[in-house]
Amino acid sequence: MSKNEEKETKRGKNGKKNGKKEEKSGKMSKENEEKMGEIEENLEKILEKIEIEEKKTPEQLEAARIVKEAKLAAKKAEEYKKLDEQIEEHVKIFQDPNVDFHGKMQQLIDIPANIKHALLDKKRSERLFSSIPLEMFETAFDPANERYATSRPVLIHVISFIVQCTAPEVHKKFKPVMANIVASVAPRDNKAEMNTVVYNDMTTIVCTWADERGDGKCIYDLLRHLTTHFNAQKMNLEVGQFLLCVRMLIQKVYMIAPIERPESFDNRMWTIGILSIVRRLLQERPEKFTKDLRQLLWDVISSMTRVAGIGWFNIDKSFAKLVIQLNHTEMQLALIDAHNPDILQFNRNLRILEMYTTAICEGDLYGDSEQSIIPHTVGESTRYLLNFWTECFLQKIELPTQLALSIFHFAVYIFVHEELKITDDKVRKNFGNCALSTAFTILEQATEADLKGEIGQLFSDMLERLAEFENLNDQVPIFLMRFLDKIRMADDYETWKGKVIDVECCLMDLRGRIDWYSKKTLKEADGYLRRFTEPEKHELNHHVFKIFNELPRVN
Image (cartoon, rainbow, N blue to C red; front, side):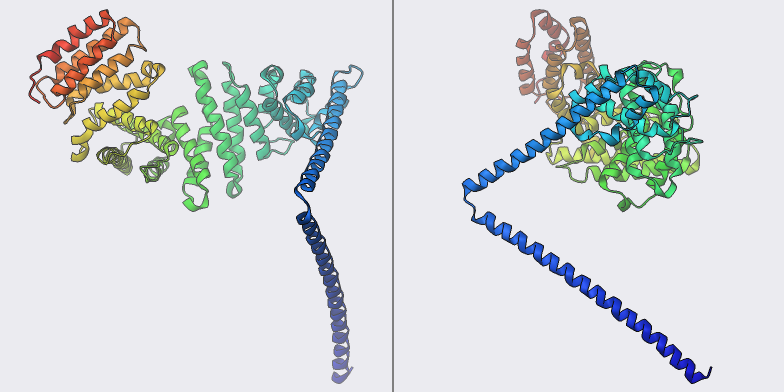
C-alpha cells in the first residue's frame, strides 16, 4: 500500500472515531436535557406545595399536622404489632422441645437481621432474650465445637445487646459462658473474622459481667486479645475505638482489684501492647487528633498509673521521658484560662505528675544521666502549678472546689515531703495563706464521708506542719474551731478527742509566733464554743482555749 493510501485509510478511521464521539456526546447532552427537565419539574412541584401550604389557614395547618401524626402513629403501631408477633414466634421456637437445636440456633443468629432492634424496649427485650436457653450459647462457644465458629461474632453482638437492654436477672444467666466467649476472640488462628466491632462488644460484655472474685482473668485475657488486634492494625489503627475499649477495661481492673487476690493480677503482654500503641499516638502531630481523642488518650495514660504504676512507664526510657514532657504541656493547656479551667483534664495530668513525684522520692525511676530530664520536668511542672495556685490567691480568683482540692492536696504533699523543697520566694511566702484560704473553702463543702477519708487526713497533715509555713494570717483560730466543729459530726467522741489533741500540738508548735491570730479572731473563735456539748467544751477549754487565753494580745 502506498503512503497516500495509508493516509486516506487513517483519515477514514479517524473520521469514524470522531463520528462515534459526536454520536456519544449527542446522547449525553440529550440525557442531560432530560435530567434537567426532571429537576425543573420536581422543583415546580415543590414550589407549588409551598405555595399551597402558605395559603392554608392556621386551622387547616393544624388539621394537616394531626392527620400526619395519626398516620405516623398508625405506621408505628403496625411496626410494633409486627415486632410483637416476631418476638412471640421466636419465644415459641426457643421453648419448643420439638424444634431441633440447629433450627433454634439459626433463629438466634438471624435476630440482628430480622428484628428491628431500635424498637426493642426493655420489656420486649426481656421477653425475647429471657426465652433463650443457656445451653445454646454454651454449645456455640464451646472450644471443642467448631460448627458455629464463624457465627460467633454475630452471637457476641447479640449478647452485647442483651447486657445493655435487659435487667441483671435476665442477662446474668448467660454469664457462665463469659470465659469461653473471651477465649473465642483470640485473634490468632481464628476461623471467624475478628474486627473492632467484636472487641467493642466484648468490652461491653466483660465490663458488665466482671464483678466477682476470679473475673479478673477474663479482663486480662480480653486485654491481651484486644491489644494484639489493634497493634496489628498498624497505620490503619481505629484510634477512638482502641482508646474507648482500653479505658473501660482498665477502669474495670481498678474497680475489681479490691476483691481479687493480689497474686491473680496478670499483666503479661497487654501492658506492653498498650504502651506500644500509646507511644505511637503521642509521637503524632497534636493536630492529627480531635480534642476528644486527645483527652481519651490522656485518660488511658492516667488510668495506667492506677493499675500498673511507675513500672509501666519504666518499661521504655524514651516513653517515660515523652510522657512527663507532654504531660507538662497538657497541664498548662488545662489551666490556661484560670476562670474556666479544664478540671477533668487537669486531674488526669496531676495524677501522672503525682506518680512521677512519688517515684523520684522513693527512687523508683531510672537514675542514669539520660533520665535527668524527668526530675527536671517534674520540677518545672511543680513550680508551674504552685505559681498558678499562688497567683490565683493573690488576684482573688476563686477556683472551682474540685480544682482547689486537687492543687491543695498536691501542695501539702510537696510540703510534707522532706526530699522536696519549695524554692520560689513568692510561693514560699504565700504558701500558708494560700493553704488556709483553700482549706476554708474545702472544709465548707466537705461531707461527713469526706472528713472520714482522704480530706480528713489531708487536714491532719496540714495541721502537723502548719508551724513550718513561712507566713500565716490571723484566721488560724477560726479555722481550727470550724475544723473541730465539723469533724465531730464525722467522728465518734473518742476519735474527736484525738483531733483536739492534734490541734493542741499544732498550737504548741505555733507558740512564739504572733502572725497567726489577733484579738478579733480569738474572740470570734471563742464564739464557736456554744456549738459544742458540755463534755466537748470541757475538752476544748482544757486543750485549746487554755493556750488561746495565755497568748499575748499584741495585735
